[in-house]
Image (cartoon, rainbow, N blue to C red):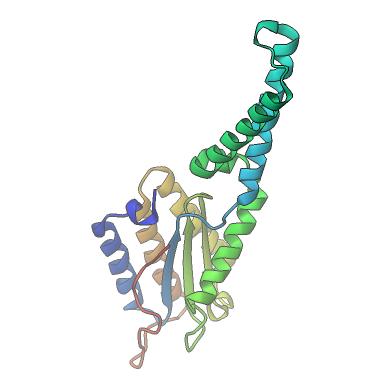
Length: 216
């Protein structure tokens, strides 16, 4: 599923409106970035290929010992079957997300997601506000991970547990299939947090980063 297929036009408009509404009261900028996957994960394909090849070779040994009628003795055929098993394993990992995810450790997923979120923070210039009051809301669907990253102007006065709560809210909604509701709730809460901390909109405030959604 592509990232565009996850949201209807109505969903996207709801999220954009939530950003506009939140930013109409605060001096901060909220930047939602949604990606289908944070990493390429070629290692998953290699691991699946090795498992596929090893599985075929193990079957050949089992047949040789316990099912002689199905035993294979031709070295070329054995090699071909093992290679075919590896190829099928790699294909499954490449095209079937649950298989690819199974081949990866949680640490690998976390690292890739964190790196991609940090890259998005820089690419979208979330840091490029007068008071350093940008907030990145980053969702990576393949990894099932959400990251909220605020610039230093906000982090000076907002405790990390506030962002952890936002992440938990979004994840709970996503698990229930209410992705848009979770995102809208998180954006609204971002605005409320900044208001509580005194980041109120000023007469000379401008929309520094734009309200468009970043879908990749």
